[in-house]
Length: 309
Image 1 (cartoon, rainbow, N blue to C red):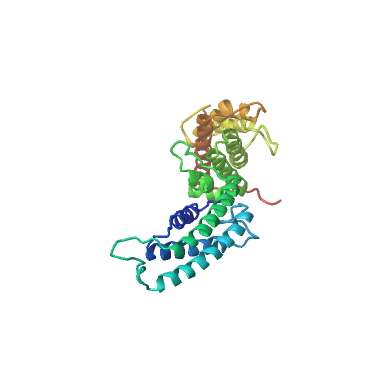
Image 2 (cartoon, helix red, strand yellow):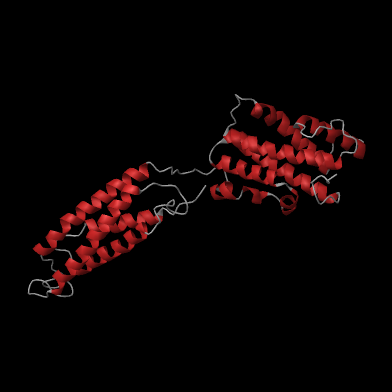
């Protein structure tokens, strides 16, 4: 997803409004200011290579607008030259500097009147084309989800992971965390939960393999339930209890919550996760991942990758 600088288009629109407001009795400063600014904005607009997407990589097709913009720029340049000639005459009716009679007085100039019609027509053609093409552009406004920054969710969700997690997690986990954040920002709540759970399952399996001495379940791609069972047996082995508030005990508790509340429903094809559920599973993913890497650090584990045999 790419951010678009919409102010560029707004700024162009503001300048074109000034061009449309030019009249046969407008001051010299108004003519020169509006036309000079219009030239600069149009040149900037047309400076984008037509073979590549417009505005920081966003794919907006403005083929017809470009043609209309080129025509408009040509008319603006010609009008600027013509207006300069009119105001440079310095005759009795039009002062050479301001285009005025008495100070502050506007005087109708028939020579300037000839310039306004083609200018107005060209601006309207350009605006009509741009309006039609931008209406087809895939641009959206994304409302904020809870207290989460939309920008962070779209591009930096993984930054919520601890430094230790970023070092230990595989690229697969980090990518799923990023996707989970993007989906949450885009209000794709079920997809948010799906990616969060994939990240949890991947790191949970590797965590189990690192710390469980005698696992009951030994398959490589265990679902969350059997992974939890393996960790419970390790907890009993280490602490002689079935539950505790130790690091391992809390990790198990977090995973049980995910499994019971989210895991089975999310994987069901008819399940639809709502916003509150998506935010909760998103938060749980970070709690679990950070807790796992913190516990592994306490155990002296500096890598989750299996040794090459």
